[in-house]
Amino acid sequence: SLCFPQKLWKMVESDEFRSIWWSEGGRCVAINEELFKEEVLGRVGPLRVFATQSMKSFLRQLNLYGFTKMQRDFQRSASLPEFLAEEAAASAHNQILYYYNPNFNREHPHLLEKCKRR
Image (tube, rainbow, N blue to C red; front, side, top):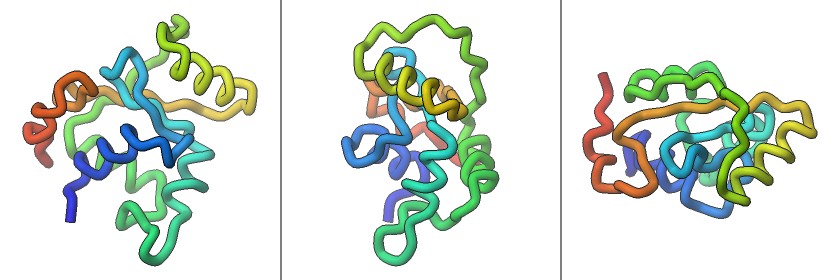
């Protein structure tokens, strides 16, 4: 089975989930909190992605693996998919969470092995 950062990477890279995507040109992970709770954490049985159904526990995992929460400075994203995802989330008044880890970068998948639990 995959470890937490690998599962997260596969999710962000996949087109299956609308609640999580690359932001800041692949340097940050953006999470639409309400949709994520429903779409990812709400899964049960064999479709379950993470061992938890709690957002708090999921965020604790991010922190344990060295992710830090970023404050959004509301500059518009350069890429169209990012922009559209943010617009859709903003119009639904959902909170978007941004998390950064120097070893979790779309352009550098080899760094993923450096994502270690603290």
